[in-house]
Each structure stands twice: as C-alpha cells, then as structure tokens.
Image 1 (cartoon, rainbow, N blue to C red):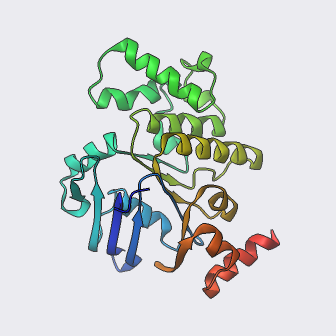
Image 2: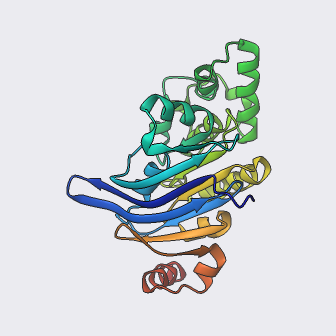
Length: 258
C-alpha cells in the first residue's frame, strides 16, 4: 500500500439543522486497504461514509481524493457534475438495501451495463460481454442475465449491486451495511465474495457495519464511532483483541455474548 492516502478527511464535521451527525473527524484510506467503521445506530458512521463519498458536504473540514494521476480533488470544492463524474468512474457505492442501488424494473445485465453507458461506452457487444463477466465474478449464473432483478432473492440482488459497482473498475468502493437484512448463511457467502474480489482487484474499501465479525474478516484497519466522534482507531485485530476505550470494550463484550 502507498504511503499517500487515496482519500483523506481532516477535521470533518457534518450537521443536519441543529443536529451534529459527526464532528472533527480525521481519517485516511490508502490504496488497496479496507477501512472498517463500526458503532451503534446513531453513531454517525453512515453520515461519515456519505461525506467521504461526496454525497453529503461537510459543514467544516475537508475531504480530499487523490486520483490515479496524483491530482488532489477537495470534494467540498467540486461542483456536483464533477462529483458525479468521479462517482461514475473512480468509485462505487453499495447500499444496504439493494433497491436503493438498482433499477428493479431492469434486467440484471442492464443494471450492470448501465454504468458503462454513462461512461460513454456504446458498443453493444462489449457492454454485454462486460455485464456477463461481472455477473460471473459475483457468482451469478449468466443464464439469468436477462431476468429482472426484482425476481432475485435479496442476496442475489446484493451481488448484482456489487457487480454494477465493479464494472467500471473503480479504485474505491463504499459499502454501507452490505449484509444488513440477509440470512446468516447468505451474509457469510457475500462477505467471503467481497473479500476475494477486493484482494484480487486491489480496490480500496470503506466499510460501514455494526457486525464486528464482518470487519474482523474484511478490514485492515478499524474506526470506532460513538455519538458522532471517533473514540478509537487502529489495526483491526489490535482494536478488537485489546480495545482501549470503554465504548470499544463494550462493543467487543457485546459481540462475545452473542
């Protein structure tokens, strides 16, 4: 992994009216790294994820993305069109609920192909070949390529959403509770699939989850959030095996009791 951060937040604070969702956040993500963000509901982790992805603009502080050419892009200073362009090319966003990231009336293949069309690809053969390839990469039978995604199970829809986000070969992937609402066996298979794909593609990942088992499997480093702030961060095994903050200790103890 490079020493230079791919994405870096400095003193970031996000507010919604009078509510401060996250405050004074300093965090960095490096190329090829998986950063996990954990905390109870309301801790601010999903707001932070959306701020890092440029979906939410911070009230103060900066989020800076460094592209493949070494150019720095302060997200708060970019126009919406420039943010959308980065989101189409350099990163992907996998939602907790697949219907937020898919078009249910379209086929699986069309959902995966759509980002390529937005990037300017017009050759039908190449688009269809790419869609088939990425459906296979997420272990979906291409025979169902032309089936509408609303006929798929929740786990299969999440795989289609993953393929849709990987088809443009992004450098950075944001995952917001990607296994939420899935059966335990489906969760395990999806997490293992994500782990394999990320390792092979060397894409950086920011993962938000309440599941400590998921971050233990996937994340290189871990951020623990409470009431909008970071209370602890470090190597994942270090934080989970020897938590220093009382809140981190409570989270780990809760996992052990489950």
